[in-house]
Length: 127
Image (cartoon, rainbow, N blue to C red; front, side, top):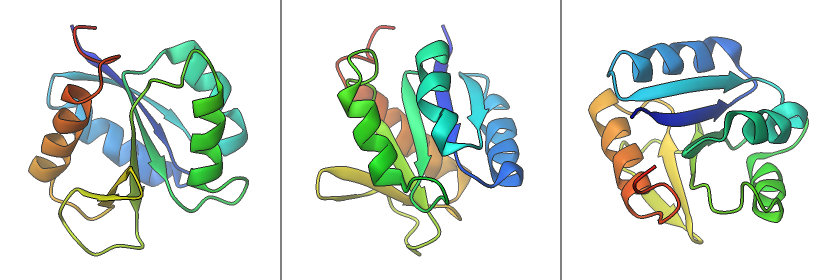
């Protein structure tokens, strides 16, 4: 069964490119959301195994949006992978209990980070 990934980023070109990249792997079903204010409702409807979340968005920043997910009983266990242009590293790094990844990361490293995040979350294993 394909893992369901929700991408939330205000840049539609980025979410479209990332969706196509992930879906081409054959293991993921991907939904895009370009509005932070609509992201919670989209997430509740889509029921993702993982959320990829931009850090800097105009309506809500990524940490504020992540907090709304964690307050929602249906979404609180969904792992979040933050993607940002603010870091240069191609590594998957943790800061303050959150996982951050550069938007210019190579595809193989992105996939490895996604799989690592999915394996370490009890809610996503076996779904």
